[in-house]
Figure 1 (cartoon, rainbow, N blue to C red):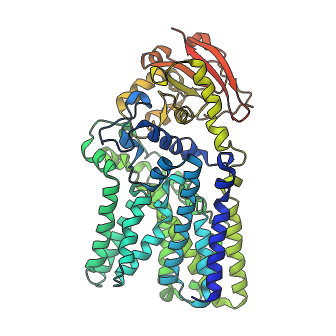
Figure 2 (figure 1 turned 180 degrees about the vertical axis):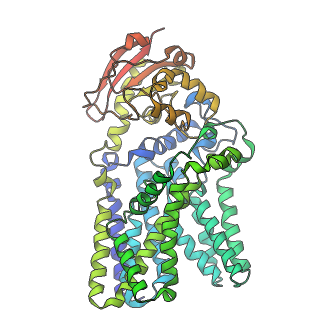
Figure 3 (figure 1 turned 90 degrees about the vertical axis):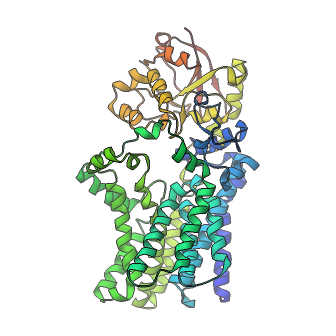
Length: 556
């Protein structure tokens, strides 16, 4: 490695530090993603930490949520880096450390993969480092950790073993990644792809390569050990749960085709690659060059990645095609397990494709080196715009979202121990109440008993029966076990400056009361509260809160 490449690596590391610095500098004033983050996972870690069940048995439950009907296993394994970070540190420190760890390993993994197996030329260090830095800055799903961004490092280790390398570092890498990744959020699909890769080698006459096969089995076993709670739930927990009513196959042929190209160009919220403006045109232009110059045989990995990229988007879109219905009716696991997530391989595919595209375009002349550097720089700058502090600056900050002082005031006003009553939220994510220690009847979890789902449905049955979208959303998924309101639709985050009012609420308050519900925390005023046997106790506002909370007490 020459001095120039060392300088580039140092610059990349400093850039990553600057990229994650807002979490450490701003602390709870930092802005984070709300969807599948503040509204769920971060609150779950806090609930788990305070439950005393962090290391609880596989049969344990979480009393604070849905009357103890939520299994401890629904919060995932404690043998997870992000869970342990949240157990050891305050939430924002844990979050910032997780971002730093994930992005640094993402960079290291992509750099090692490109340097060893794809971009070896010394004079192309700028491609290796630049593409690796861009990959590390992608807006990944925070609680996914290395589930997608760890794939380059795992592929580096697998390819090393496949080629006969006997270094213990490769095996150690495969053993450690499962401690900071999820098998269902990425690595099931990656490992099964590796299995297909091994099988293709066998079919092509390259031998059985027992070491390569055993390495795949080895990492799979480690994952199963780490995810022992998931394995237990799958094998031994036969109580019908909310996943059993999940239904995905409803798109027409045309909508599936349209979704294919939407995903191909724009990506998906959980694996955002931000590739549409720079990477996609560059890779397509490189493909055009390879075809025109008749270099298809010399660029087999490049061609394969292009085909795979489109195939993954097609698979994702057509997983929701209604033509699957006969199979899903016969094989129930096709509904309960999201096989569409093979598209989680796309960040790895797209950024390796980006590196290979730039390498190919170098053949057009020296001017393309400057163009290539410009393209990488442009991609990095675009990704900077997706930094959470920039992208979500109009959303509530961590402190504004969880509003601890405001909710402490509410608890003090109620004046009872939290375990003696239950609350639910309207126009507000229940994760906020959970984070602040309230016992809630509502929740955002996709793995809880169907019996509870039916009990909770009685509370909102009049609101969702007249709203086709809400009815479908709850009945055919139910992960958001929320008090849905027909007037509000699928909107549940109304800030204190909102002018909305709920004019004709129609809840089954008796069903709410029978489940232990005594208070409703609403971010909007309910004009017909008396018709619903709800008495407005008090309105709560706070400077460092995004919400105005109307506290209603059940009056039966």
